[in-house]
Image (tube, rainbow, N blue to C red; front, side):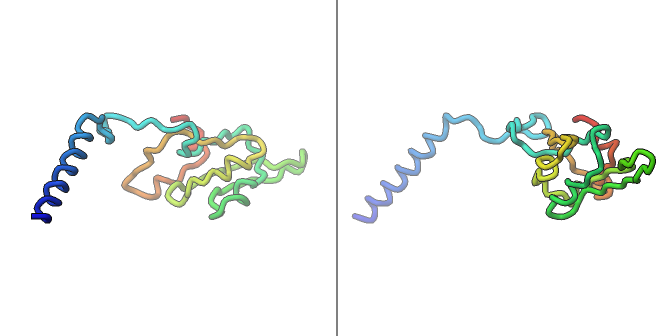
Length: 135
């Protein structure tokens, strides 16, 4: 008799929990049709401004996996580096944000773009033109 009483209490408490959840709003979203709202500090795809970059390579030094590829040439007449190419492979990037945080000219910034999926991993290697596009 005692076991039967505990069984009824367990069933009743389970039923009450189910009823308390019945009036709640759904937690999930219908992804392709609804986009999730990203927070203010969300770390998405990196945006690059070619004109601001001074090819100092700070982003490469602070990256835990030495990811950004910076190609430059030294202009001897003006004694400055000239940026030739800048690329990031988002298939390898861990989106830590160190490159954005330590960039002295603020030529790198994080966007809210998170839809980077593709069937070919080589398409995840973005050059300075692809990085310069805003989402």
